[in-house]
Image 1 (cartoon, rainbow, N blue to C red):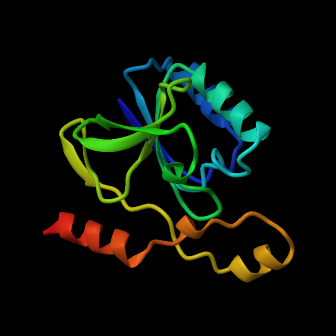
Image 2: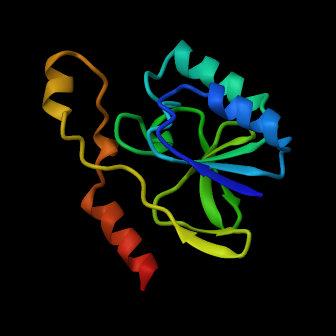
Image 3: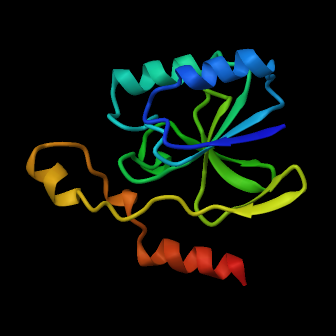
Length: 152
């Protein structure tokens, strides 16, 4: 079964409760459509979130958004094919997959193309006050062209 959520902002108690309530298993997939808060600070807090998610009985398929770093820029992520498209995964967190922009995935017979990220309207404020901001929150022209080429 495929489930969809978004805007978890690093708080996963409701997903834990959801998994208990519905009796999910590793064959089930929870799609997080942005603002997951998993690759947010790049430190120990992110690691703890990943460890927490790894023990839940469900596979996570995450589309990155603004306010989080893309996995392609983080050491240790490897590319692999999953359901027809490329994802980023760390060996120590096999049930946590991050979609590569422009890839097409087969989600139980439905084709879905992924393009995460967005313009951060608060970029200047975040930079001025020392909050995290990563250049890959916003797509480069190269990524945009790649995604457009996949649509044709």
